[in-house]
Amino acid sequence: MSHGRRALLPPLGLLTLISLAALLFSVSVGSASLTWGDVWSVMLGEGEPLANTLVLELRVPRSLSAFATGGLLAIAGALMQVLLRNPLADPYVLGLSGGASVGALAAMLAGLGGVMISGSAFAGALASTFLVFGLAHGTGSWTPARLLLTGVVVAAGWGAVITLMLAMSPAERLPGMLYWLMGDLSYARTPWYALALLVSMCLVTIPLGRSLNVLARGPLQAAALGVNVRPLEWTIYVSASLLTAMAVTTAGSIGFVGLVVPHMLRLVLGNDQRLILPACALAGGALLVLADTLARTLIAPEQLPVGVITALLGVPTFLFLLYRSR
Amino acid sequence: MAFLETRNLRIDVPGRADGRALDLHVSPGQMWGVLGPNGAGKTTLLHTLAGLRPPRDGEVRLDGRRLDELKRREVAKRLGLIFQERQDGFPATVLETVLVGRHPYLSPWRMEGGEDLNIAQAALARLDVAHLAERLVTTLSGGERQRVAIATVLTQSPQVWLADEPTNHLDLHHQTAVMALLAEQAGQGRAVLMCLHDLNLAARWCDHILLLYPDGEVCWGPASQMLKPAALERLYRQRLATVEIDGAPVFVPVR
Image (cartoon, rainbow over all chains, first blue to last red; front, side):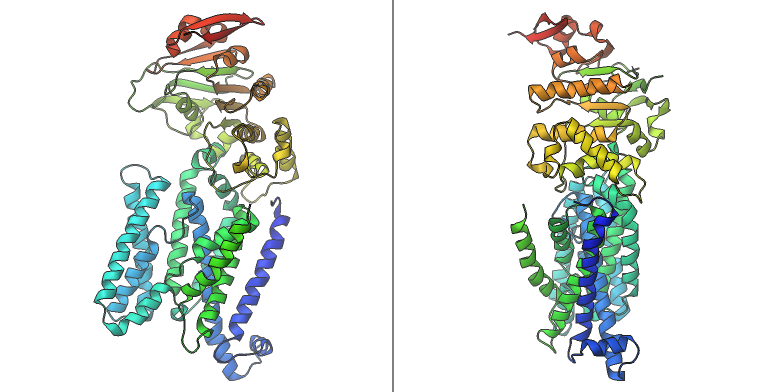
């Protein structure tokens, strides 16, 4: 139970500490392990040149990208679950990752690189969002069930297109494509856009939080309690799509974080969105930072797809919490 | 002045003829009972009066102002609705559920404070569910959940209470307690309009009655004029016997 602002501070404070620890851990370990003292002196601007390059140009941007991506996905998942009032909803449930993947793979097939892949993925994500919403809206108004069904079917369509593209691709391009599909942070360049979006989203959700709590009790009940349901639902839909598109563009389609992090937090912290949404930003971020660190160190110098690690870390944790819950 | 007023209102029940338009004046202190068989549009009427669905024709006024021109938040401060059906989105405790009744009064940046908590706890105690405060709503019985829903509207503290079958799932004692609560609200200068299946509750507690026929026909007026066996038998297509207990009519269906 949380009543009053004071009740929010202990869990958010703890999660902030965990996030900082995860970031510090991720910056210190790798092909050349640094002591925390080394990292500290780099942060103070007194590090050795090699350590400087390693930390500031490689590890910090990647860790921050991982943090931002995890946070964005977890918030987007929590928002989708409130919007659709369905615990199985995740950021990709409306076919967004499929659209992004098709965009990214098309760019890779065309031999484009870097920025073009990201841009193409972003365009694909937004195109899929509009497609699903337009189709679900149809001639009348949309309902969560209709939106969900449209999204699932469109996602299946994207899945077929992705398989087709993989089947037609030259063998030497396949590994890059597969890694992108499973989520890969080595493409992440600058974390700042994603981080800025994450922070601004957290600020927006503070005043919206109580309305979201009411909306979670159903649209009629929410309207009777003074919520402008349709504008709020639009806001959720557009922002969740934007967050997911940004996350997918940064790191490919990383599954699991958006579905499970909100649920884990709900099992422990209850259902107040004013607490859950910022907690999602922190916990989702920390989880992905840890997963990415393991992904690039476990079988170094080879890298594992980070999506594999998020699932391997998250599945047992989630099942344990679910088993223990009342 | 009427709290809640309809002008030339026709509710929108798909596939039904227009029927007679409603010109209701629900004034402070009144207890209205809406009677009608299944599918007559009782819930639709209540949702239309609450501004949750558009009417086919006409308008609803709250405190003299058109409902569709008021902000939802302003409506929610004046008008509360006890729903017949409830959705369980995510698990929530009883206290959390009742606290959402304070939503219309709090600015977006404010969290529920001690005063809101006191109001919610008083409502829980009034409905005899204070001991369940920390329980999850999904673990309660139907009657307990009904009382939690009523406590939520009590926390919302509206001038106009709309209630869709407020005695659903309640045992006899709690039926009477809830009707007494609604009568107390009316006695304090608020207005109550409720759909009821139980004719006898309506006869005992309501001072005004609205009869809703399945073909869209409606009639309304003081309870003493409306609760005539002939009209009620036509309404329910059921023969009734009438006896009098404590000065109020009691209707019993006969085979």
